[in-house]
Image (cartoon, rainbow, N blue to C red; front, side):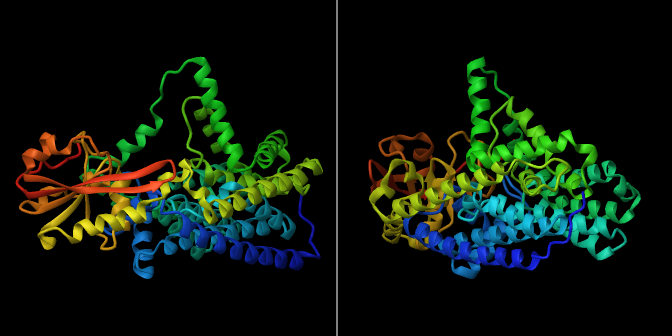
Length: 511
């Protein structure tokens, strides 16, 4: 089914830009409120610390998020708002590209509806508020979809294939999921009768090879570090034997989380649109087939995987992007079967209601004392704790010969590194003696022999003064005081010790 020319195309495109501008202004306000009421999430601080030591790869991820954090820190002076604004900017650009995909494949009304459906999801709100590795991945993925379509439209254009190769490469440096993009290209070329000539097109194969070549320095880094990223990734797919009841509970949890972040009715609409496309796959237009193949096979694989283990909600995010465009086309009657008008009406109503509730909740929580509720404790109190820790560091006898070490979770080291005003280089003690984070890959305190150490213990009362590792490593241990930051019913606490004259330290090495 071809899409007839829309005389109101310019009007719908104007409405999109007006909507985007209004949403951007609102999100700027929410971002500033969030910055004022909450600290960085643990992963954000962790990735920021990566950015201070740019490399070709890190413990769990390719390097792009670290590089981005380095640039953001340099441009904004390591300000929280810089990290938040980067998330908002990346999310906004990604939405513009998705709108462009729908506009090119269908029409302006479908593009507007696609953007509206996406905006009215909790996933979109989160993507524009927290800077994680999914932000650059989704930007590269959506741009890759658009560029691949353009290249398929004009397969002899070298510039289009080169641009696609660069996007695949940058996406590969952002998250491992981008390695699946070339498979998507090949599946479409093999299934679409009009595009099978692409399989004989040297330019497409060159684009794939050039794009995937960006992974070479990442692989080289991993080879030098005992393939630690691969080992970490494998843990995501470790199956666990469960009872039937727990299996049902986990499976429903996977579905429920997806339904929550994409809002229940919209999620059901996405599934219904994909089912409708399966039923009428022989009649799908080339654009609809492209979107179907870019979403359905991968989402089906994740659905099967969800029967085996817990699925992080962000894992299949890239494949939901073309599903949203396909669902909008289905609601507009541009697939072989047209959706009941209720799907569009209730998707927008329920999605809009939930997004308004979420944003109002953020305003109420962070503008009142409700921000002290326990669920928000993990992203509060770090700034105050960092300031207090800095006071202890300023009072050490040998400031120029004192390093800072944090115990416990990697977030403790990352948050203290960010929120201590001097942004010191933080070391982390891993009790297991194995590599569990990037901090164990970087050189440890063994490079600071003869130095003193300000030690931050997030579990007061655990007896650091009698811990054999520290007793043997330092000439003397002194308890310097405690940090206590009230967080409603909880307290962010650290016991602060000064280790005098580090004599020895066993380096952690990947096995």
